[in-house]
Structure formats: structure tokens, C-alpha cells
Image 1 (cartoon, rainbow, N blue to C red):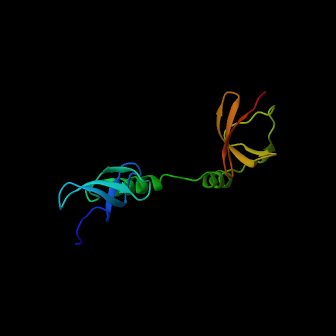
Image 2 (cartoon, helix red, strand yellow):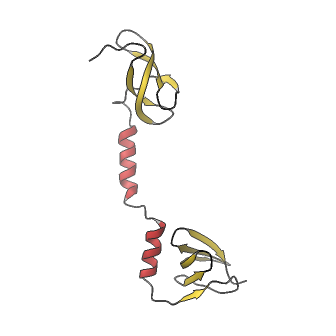
Image 3 (cartoon, rainbow, N blue to C red):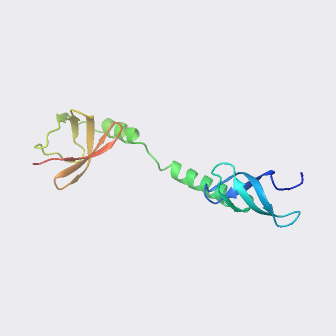
Length: 137
């Protein structure tokens, strides 16, 4: 292992970036222990954090893997909703009355499926976004 000295690069956990990143040694406690480092990414100066002791990679990987299976894109929701319905589409109008599962044709957003009805508003899934629209007026 190379000698640790001020000015050398070392891997450390960055408290601002919340990642294990390359840092430059700014101060040493003694010949073997690093005191302060400066992040090469965000330029924050902080106490040296041993990357093997940080939970950044373990926590981040765990969160990503557990939530990745649950995350569904708006496009996927739209495709699933459109393929699971046999209803005919109807043009959207603020005066029209819609219920859950209805297919609407919006002049600006295109075809969409009503996912939720709350009083005089409907939540509609369009191909690239979810919109809250007014109806029954």
C-alpha cells in the first residue's frame, strides 16, 4: 500500500454526496490515520469516513432492488389499462360525466383511462403523464 500523505487521493464516504467517492487528503492525525479530506466531486471538506464502514452502497443497493420491482412507469400503467378494457372511447368535455375505467379522448393529451373519480374531478392516465381533470360541470 502506498504511503498516505497530504495531497494524495483516497476513497472516502462523502457526507454531502452520500456516496463513496475519490477525495484528496487535506490533514493527517498521524502517519497512519487521515483526519480531513476534500471531496473531488463537490469540493466539501470533512472528516475522513472509511468507505468500508459506510452503509452507502449497501443501503442504496438494497433500496434500489426492493423498490425497482414495485416501480411502474406511467406508460406501462396506460398500456395495461388500455389493454384490459373493452369500453369505447368518448370525447372529453368538462360537462361530461365519467366513471372509473372509462376511456376518454382529450384534444391535447390524447387517449386516456379514468383511474379515479373524486367528486367533480377525475384522475386520468395518459400515455406520458397522469392528469387531474374536472368533469360534471
